Image (cartoon, rainbow, N blue to C red; front, side, top):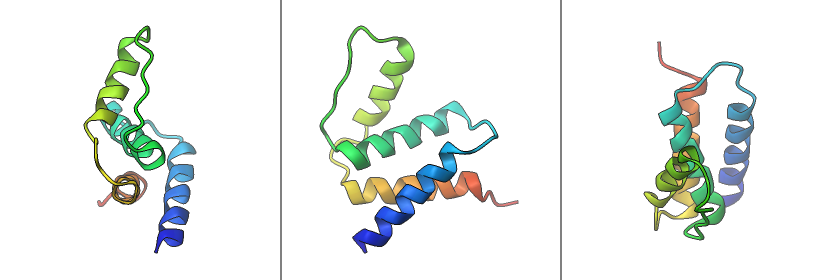
Length: 88
């Protein structure tokens, strides 16, 4: 399962990264947070001298505290799929 999940996660990340259309900022924030949690877990880092945008990103990540790497990957994939394959 882990290998398949990792492959799906990387594929979802690559598809989102190559999108030509704009994605709503709140959705991008969620994707960012899921990605950070999936890759770094609760190992938060924040540069206090950063701008407001980075503060929002950090806050979004902090809200996922204690979410497992596996769950974060699943949520990232699920959200990415709603963007890539929206229901009509």
